[in-house]
Image 1 (cartoon, rainbow, N blue to C red):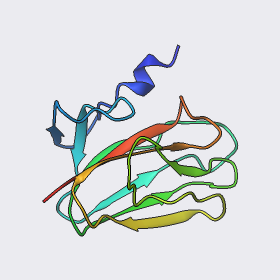
Image 2 (image 1 turned 180 degrees about the vertical axis):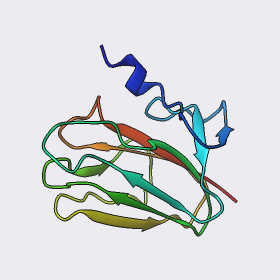
Image 3 (image 1 turned 90 degrees about the vertical axis):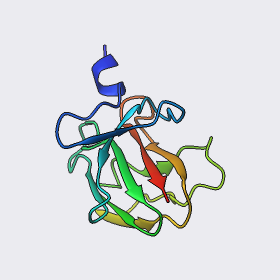
Image 4 (image 1 turned 60 degrees about the vertical axis):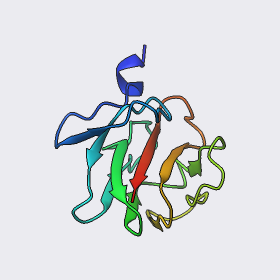
Length: 123
């Protein structure tokens, strides 16, 4: 059972909790407001959770995903409109700058319930 992977809690670093914004299981967000965030996904074919999968940044900051997008396409969570995260199915890095506050979900296009997370953006 993958419940532990879907809780969204972060195992290291400080967290920012926003009880009103639960997206893709994220209830605690790693605080990456000092310099933006880097999210790492698997580099091979086997599925693994993004690390960290729940990040908190400020408006105007960026998140960079590093993963094998051919095996694990990055896809925005459809419930967020508009979501600045764009689908990425090639390469190994993708960066997104977040121009507005909100909580924006993302997941692997193949492992949608195993590999997921969210970016919480505050002013």
